[in-house]
Length: 319
Ligand SMILES: [Mn+2]
Image (cartoon, rainbow, N blue to C red):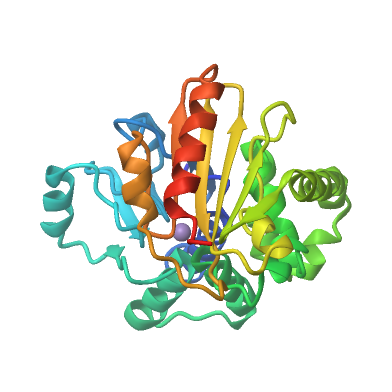
């Protein structure tokens, strides 16, 4: 393996970054390189199985740094790019000119393309659409809740497939398609359509279930998904049905946990007045000011419902 690319798995920005780096590498470094792809996922403790750095050259895109001399290229834009202080020092001491971080860029795809142009004089206009969509999706720069919930572009349909696909070999096909085709062409490929159609059908069922179960009161939408089999959902669905809401709070149950999700509407007529990360941290969860979550043991549904009610009481607006 001439080049191993480790990319943020099940993430449109990560997959796009792998495609962009592939084209960059073939154009600038080695046109004939044999390239392998490995998805990486967030998990507790060390993010990497270091045996994954098995190429003659190894690159990580859209994921944490790995303080290992086998790592050649690195591009990331996450706030939490380093697991430890030592990892950060390892990066700061690097003089290769092949490792890059910009925590202010909303997408790794746009950042990688910018570095390729500024530092290596390489640009590929055929990637402009892909970069633009990776930036919209990773930065959540949607025009409206409807744009995202109704999946009003080929990019958003493909996002739905990438986020749920469990087979890395299939994601690799998508990466290679991204180096050769437009997004409209990709979603028309028979093997993509075959997988996408049931995913889109499930998406519409989830949208309907959330609509049926939602209640709105005093600036907060609440819904309970326990027993529905729904583990994940497009987080803009509540704002699609309740544009007047400021917050949404839900409880759901998956194979391994009960989860309380708390979010805020980017288009809310009444601005958010609470820091959601701080609220979730009090219950052992976390997140950002605008969105957060709490994970409980799978069987702790009643506890989850109780916490949910407390949080709703705290963030609701006065009558
Ligand atoms: Mn990203």
